[in-house]
Image (cartoon, rainbow, N blue to C red; front, side, top):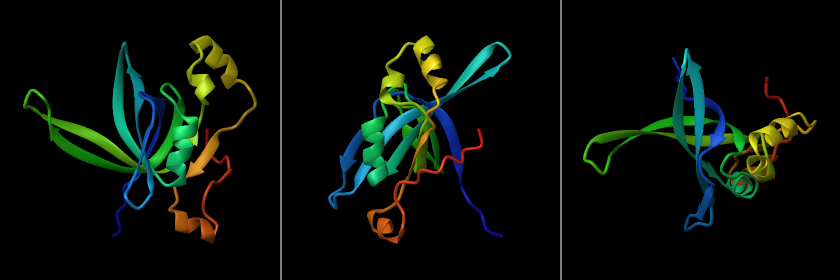
Length: 150
């Protein structure tokens, strides 16, 4: 039987995206995204570290900022590390295959009331598929379909 690893996250960026380039010239964008769920009278926040490659990385750098809302789809990887106090820590890392921008940079800079009003505007999400540069010659790249089921 085959197996697969897929995660879908809708959350808010906790820091501005950071883009760097590999020696081969491939762009890699990293950012953190948080999801919050309410249980009774408590809120639980889970943080994920996200990495996006290629032209999608450059688009994330251009259009996302701290506080932006995004839909991220990719593979979940668990990483263990040692904290400064010597105790073991666990990090949840996502290698993104697709990123949808659910808000813009200007939305993230607004007050919550302004952002709620802007969310009612008839602009749909911007979808960026993470593809390698050579895939663009095969019809890959930015995909403008808005087929998110919510």
